[in-house]
Image 1 (cartoon, rainbow, N blue to C red):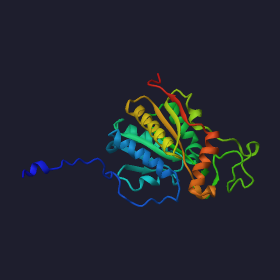
Image 2: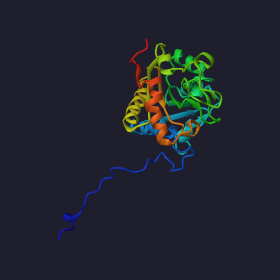
Image 3: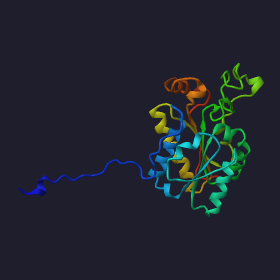
Length: 258
């Protein structure tokens, strides 16, 4: 019998990423930040830009998902990640794909000035902000994005707008700025939203590749520990409460900022 007739042609259809180390995640159970990091990693690989990428990780637990990867990275003080990313971009003569991964406190509180200046400069970088409505690393204090009525360690009676201020809508805030090429908000609370958010992240990276301007994506993520919920309850809370305050979608998508 001809052995060639029995030969089976095998084709690899899936394998673990060569850019991931297989390290155990340091995140708390149910944390949404590793899901956001996974979206970014998949996007970089699928777009063929991962070997030319640099991630700037702000203070907090948001960027821990990159600890187990082979992506070039740097850390910075609390807030200035956009400016650090812009410096790396310019220092590499615009050849690198540079992005930040930041929490809402890092990006929209102490880092708000850096974010706004990056937006008005039209820095050709990508900013990913994970919004879990709290300061996750430091014990669950009120953040700029905390919902009205939300109980935190610094608002035990619930956030009161007239007393504590109102939730900050970052993608909508920076969308009118001329230097911004793309601004969107996604979520990872279900598979459909996860896939849609991945498209947003890819569009933001594409603006950087095309040299248009700043790309910004906010991702709603769960923090079950500080929300005092189970992971399942936290996902439902995003659907029932967070999205009412923070609608999902694209707020700006232009091919030129001139």
